Each structure stands twice: as C-alpha cells, then as structure tokens.
Length: 287
Image (tube, rainbow, N blue to C red; front, side, top):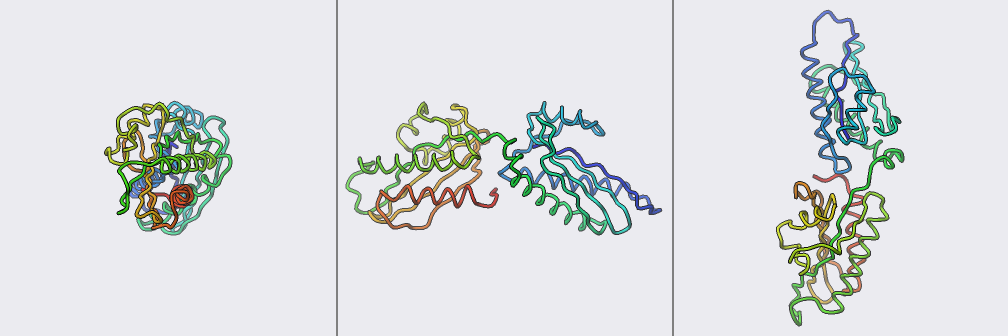
C-alpha cells in the first residue's frame, strides 16, 4: 500500500490564520497514519512518488510504478470552530476500483483532537480493508518458505542424540499439516523448499543458525521464512514454537510458543496447527 498526503481545506470562516498550525498537524497526522500501516503485518508500506497536487490519474500511475497494489487517499475539511470532516478511500491500483471509502467527523482543532482522529481513521480503514473481499483479492499472497519442523529433545530419557525413525515420521506429518493450514488460509503461497541448500537446512538445525533461514528462503524466491520447533520435554510432554522472518531484513515479524502439551509424537501436528492458527492466522497484528 502507498499513502498519498491528504488535502486540507478550511471553510470555517474564522478570522485567525491557522494555516501554519494546520499544516503541522496534517504532517503529524500523515506520519502517524503511515507508521500505523507500516507496523501492521497485514500490509507493506511503499513510499509515495506522487507529486503534490497531482491529478488522480497521475497518483494511480505513480503508485503503480512504485509497485503498490492499493492507494490510500483522503482529505480533511474544517467546517466550523469545533467540527472537522475527514474522508478516506482505498483504491485498487490495477483496476481503479474503490475498495473502501469512509467519511468521518471529529470535534476539536488541537493536537489531541487530531491525534484521536488519526488513530480512529487508521483503525477503521485498516479493519475495513482487511475485511473487504475485494481488497483480499487485490493483495497478492505472501510467498512463504515453511522449512521442515525440527526436534529439540531435552527429555531426560533420550536414548540417543538425533531423531528416531518415528520422530522423523511425526515431524514430517507436522510439517505437512502446517503447510496445508497456511496454504488454505489464502494469505500465503507456500513454496517448495526441497532445493534448500546449506548445512543448517540439511541437518535440520535452522533453529540455531542465527536467522540464516531468511537468506535460504530468499534464494528460493520467498518473502517470508518459517522455522518450527518441537521441544520434547518427556516422552509424553512437549511444546511447539515458531519464528516467521522477513527475508529482506532478516527481522522476526511473528513468533509464538505453546504451553506444555500432553501426548507423544503422534500429537505434535495437532499442537503445531493449533499454535499457528492461534498465534499467526487469528492473532492481532504483531511488531
């Protein structure tokens, strides 16, 4: 998504010239709005290349050239001493179809009133976009490399280091179940990782490689990488955790860990699916 600067119009008829204060508040409003979108893991913010006062066609063209799929535009109008209007619209860049359009009113013309207005406009637009089937269709799925789940065996009764045949079967089943879950969610395109190279990937030791999974995923054409770990506490107790990284920055964009669960390795897949559903697919935005 790219966000163009909102316009501002004062038709209140007040005698005092407040243009400088309004310009400062509008700049703070736009900075906060872009910050909210950048922090929301459902969207990727792309800087706007549109020139100030550009026509709608030029704005769409600039957004398309920047690689954005959604263009957010809007304006604020002061209609009286205490009342201001705001209008915001999200447009599908490819089709020029309005995905979401909302009209807001807010009272007050000081820093606090503008801050409250920005928080409300931001939340309403992001929620509406996330709930819009047109917006979902417009947004390309994130290419995700889901690496094979790994076993961290800390049980006192471990017979030998490494994975047993039954462990390998359970881990493979867990990986398949998670890949199926994420592919069916519609948010991700799960890509093939069979060509993954590197000692850590081959040894199933990505959990200890300091984020090297991001580079491996990038070489496979992915946008995100996911590493999952089953930690066996005992033969009937285990936990599951995962880390989702952005391949460009290597930063962790989502993570989660389950509480202690009961069940032998045949139940790992159920625990992993539940964790990913709760902490990734249905969780509130993180980081």
